[in-house]
Length: 115
Figure 1 (cartoon, rainbow, N blue to C red):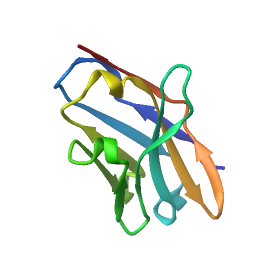
Figure 2 (cartoon, rainbow, N blue to C red):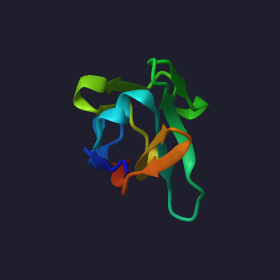
Figure 3 (spheres, rainbow, N blue to C red):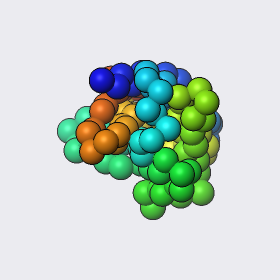
Figure 4 (cartoon, one colour):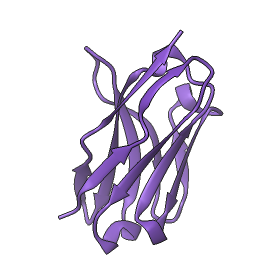
């Protein structure tokens, strides 16, 4: 069983930055692909960014050039650096791990961007 715990959310003004962290239990973290998703009120959960176990990133068009996903396998942690934040980035952000064909989700962390 893999447990994921997100942190780093909060309230920030438009144009500001936040760094989200996703800490995973278990040493099999390095064998999994990681992803960040967000869900705004009344909307479906959407992909923000993913990173493969080998470190290849992929981004939603809406965050390209502003967000950076990374991982530190030694610390069993994935990160999402969010710069130039916009009010439309306001959502709950969830971390996801895909390990051995199983999906694992964290509990989410709220990000609120004020205009």
